Length: 256
Image 1: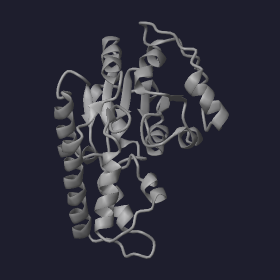
Image 2: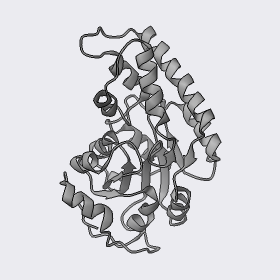
Image 3: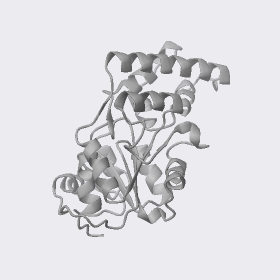
Image 4: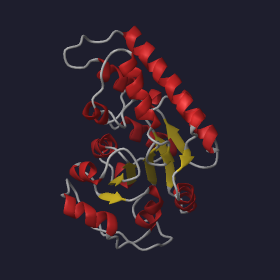
């Protein structure tokens, strides 16, 4: 697979997604930790989080254009609420207003998950197992708070023995695109060399956080919020169709 060290144009991106030269193997090539986003990257939740976010903010009387919503995909959800409420021409929202809208978002999201429960994306659980069997640690990182995440993990049966660490928005001082979710995942899994960390996600902010951390690989996956055009314009090393393809990248022969 072609390895880009900065931005990629659309043609290069298409080749990166469809033209892998990696081969399966059992020897780890350069990575101790794979840090993965949750919604849209490892979990299929049918866009419920962004629908709930938009509906909660608009219920507070603030229109949410699609472009504004997309800028906050992958971010700490409380920070996203704050930013969306502070639309151009509006005053800075109070802490009480942010809290009210955030609670509404949580209620709407819980309802959406009850109506249409999230599921693991195809091949993801097998990818986790294959990586961990090869002594590559797997961590989940997310812009959700711990309460939402615990409910998701329980619904999926991922409470124990599936991944090595789960890092939530309320575990760090600042969410994406800051690198702290990745650094905390390193702390919790005992990994000290960020060059031996692969980060993957479905949003521009996921990739920007990987770049900010100095991760050895920054992988965009095309199962979620952002497509090949936007991810291809954002600094990355690889674009893949799915997290299901990660073991071949991590455990195969990769030209670096």
